[in-house]
Image (cartoon, rainbow, N blue to C red; front, top):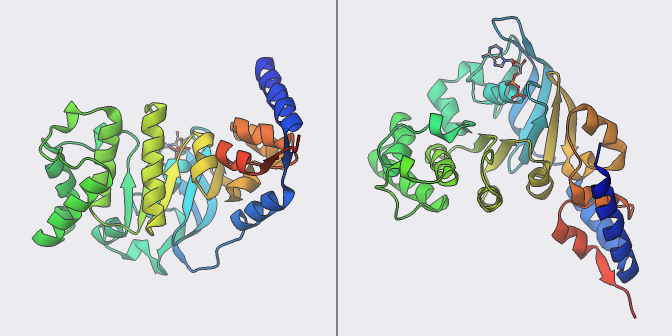
Length: 310
Ligand code: ADP
């Protein structure tokens, strides 16, 4: 349930906007068309009907199929315990399915060496501190590529590039634990990036970060995505999904309840699905529904309107 005061805020905002601006439907239709065009390229990771039960007997995944394509920016969402992490861990063979299979560029990951899969599909775990164990940032970031057998020169290049990408240049010799949580999250991302994977999976990369830190991590992922990396994030922050991801997969009790463009998920017809999956519609989507559209960010929403002639 949305509290009354929020309704009042949205009511007020709706009236204020409605009196001063008009919706440009052509501009909206164009944006909505672009974001719902399905990708037709061959999948990089093709998850085919996987099921997974843990030893204790919990069935965490039931017949899950998802195709990940080059350049995707996917958010995986759903209640705690709905199977998101279990699913993600199958993509780089950290877990094996009881049935079904995962293909990487057409090849079953079960037949690839763990190091080969790790080179292609990088995984940044939920708590950066569980991933950090070296005394300097540089040693930490160097660990992955060294272990995966990259040559010395290549390793140094990848390490320098990864540290620069995450914005920690100049701090190479610092102790990771002298930094903020947001910076330690960047180290964890750099450590995975330095292995130069095609696909980067991040399990709740913004948990525990403040607004500025979370936006800065998301903008960095957006830049990496534009440079060609395929990004998959597990998250509970629907406002970030709305603004940054292109596609969203909703997990519900171990199954995929929705897989499609972010805008489609936030349309009024999916209200029940969102509620059943424990997901609250972002406020900007809620406000935009009053105008008969679904906007994904405040700046996008504003761009759909023209000032009324006075
Ligand atoms: P999510 O990432 O959506 O929170 P998980 O994939 O972590 O969901 O968990 C899915 C289900 O599997 C839950 O019921 C959880 O308790 C169970 N589970 C997760 N990891 C283990 C494990 N190592 N051993 C036994 N059960 C587990």
